[in-house]
Length: 218
Figure (cartoon, rainbow, N blue to C red):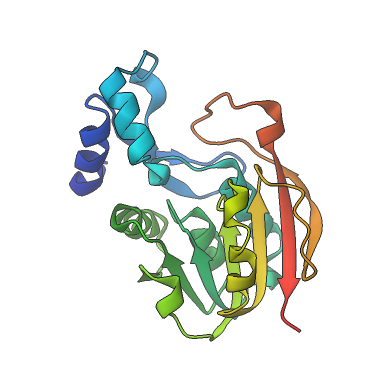
């Protein structure tokens, strides 16, 4: 099976010898088009490093928080079954796909990056699920039962988003491995989950511990 040409082209514009392959995520039945690490064990050129930093291909990895949230939804489908769900900053679409597989009534994958939206479409097709798509969270109506979020709070400057999530949904589930200890009156930590980014980037052990928070509107 060959990856979608548009995604392969987008990746090769950043890394000329990079390839996408369909990978089954550990501990799940979800498959995603992800960067194939088999030929990437090399030093990046200064130009490649610049491009990666300027336009990181988030969609070509399954980050630890997304994997942890996907596993959690598979184990606890009652959180999404029969509900309208929006995946904020969807990236590869892993959390959106997990919600759809767990029986959500509707799932919207939302991401500003048009290539990420393409990735979500391709990965939804790979898993035989149907998603809707949105490039603008703030253009969406306040009609969702649940907003799901993974790997978005990597910078504390993004913490104001915590209030915005509840402007479009009655509840929010936020998974993050970088900012684990934020204080917000509406968010309660449900637990700490273990996962790693896939393909494994050999990240520090601390980034394999994913905090999961829940909030509900008053």
